[in-house]
Length: 416
Image 1 (cartoon, rainbow, N blue to C red):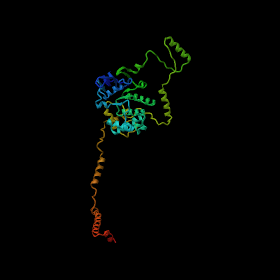
Image 2: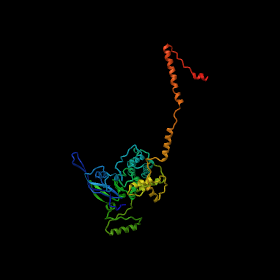
Image 3: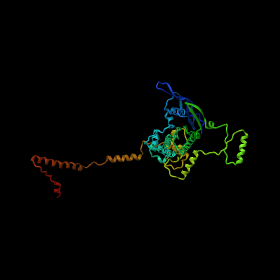
């Protein structure tokens, strides 16, 4: 998995963070003289007990905290640069999501932050929801999600910008064993496709399964660092696994081992509870038993399945230039190149047919006929009747009579 490139995905040089008290005196040394080097295309397990400085280090890498001394670099630059920060996906320890947004609206919100076009956001949202097993819950509000489901949607938002570096703090917290297994497989596949992952977790079995190297922090200092095999392999013991053996063969093995002066313990191996749990649930899913829980993730697909390139703008151009109605088959390489080279369609200028329609509507509105003079002359006739009635009332009032006479209807007489 690990590349041989010289540039590190993450590098810290004597990174130190001291939190002072009210008087400015050193109170808590959260991180002290940390020299961390994470290779590109590597899954690095960043471990330590609570309060060891893991989260503080992550916040300094993301420029959320300023170090007391030392420096940190991501892909050889500073996170202050938008070109660097746009290549990072971050999942914090707690999922700070808007409770009243749906899953789709949440991913669309984060896609807008990264400036992704609407068509790319829509395609990526559906891909990510299927990948984390929430395709059937895209229209549910985040407030109705369990903690494990919230972690799934949090992981999806960390991948919405197709990052080169994933910083994940307790990504499988609250997930069921099936979801945990799927997410671990997802990490391995992402690293195989060129992503770098900094993984913080207290679930050490998960770290052991997926990480290339691990580092253990205590008191803000790096205590030990190395590959999983180098740190965990016991060099003074041997382990053998065989099929079913007869009692006679077991006795011979015991005599041979005893002659070497070494103790021997023979017992039947046990399956891991995680593996047994997965087998039971997988069988139930194959039988299509009814459930209202999350679905199985689909794994890497869509934009995450593409080969990584150095120029990230080319990924967007390729996705925008791709024909939206292309069949399920992948286009030929020459077609992909042409789609990448073709200039993107301008979104600010409407097509020519719209201009013609606009001119036609404008011309029709301008050339609409004015109201006829007959209509204009007939409208004042109504107040003239009212005026005759008013004059009649004034005349009757002056003469002292209360009887109101109606005006003569000349039109009826003439018609008669």
